[in-house]
Length: 230
Ligand SMILES: C[S@@+](CC[C@H](N)C(=O)[O-])C[C@H]1O[C@@H](n2cnc3c(N)ncnc32)[C@H](O)[C@@H]1O
Image 1: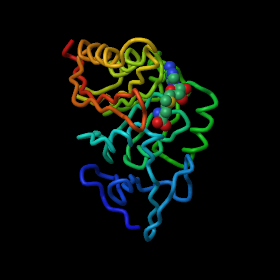
Image 2: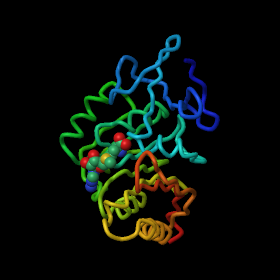
Image 3: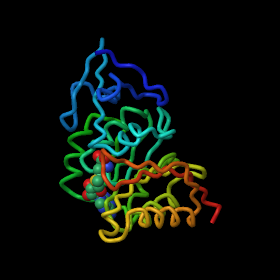
């Protein structure tokens, strides 16, 4: 099966259509896979299938995100890297650095194993509640802060990290899991509260993408940050 370039997004590929539609990224770490994903070979290239049930960014693309703001020149601060499923695909997309923060020792061990030969991934063992802890590792302007942290204060974590690291006009990609915030309140109310909090902190909401059926009760927000707005 031949892979084709995605119509909208640089560095993303697809095969099939309808129920058979699948996303891929071109593997920069040839010979290695990260989470048991399928690989297609074409000439000298390897394409890793990007599973939307395992990666919220892939789910957002499947659900017709207009723009993900990640290309070959994007520098990313990624909070909640886990063992590197999504980080590895993002690392296929950009030539710049991904600062991948994770606080669970077991996950960071797996992240290091999975990304050891990906030169653009810097794993950082730290609690994202305290962004000053990793200031010594980050020396450049951050274009995108990606947050996928299943914690009740996930939006506060996003805001403090953007205020410290994200460039003016930079992009926040923020995955909100309603059940991590409140198991009782209506989901839409929970999402609205997080959106309001972001707007009050100076973010302009660009897109809100419901991630069903891939991740239930999840919203992916894409927002632009203006430090000087608040
Ligand atoms: C839903 S998983 C992330 C999945 C990953 N983004 C992916 O798509 O491959 C959430 C991760 O956030 C991490 N996490 C939760 N709270 C954190 C914190 N305060 N600082 C850093 N990592 C945190 C958890 O240990 C977990 O690995």
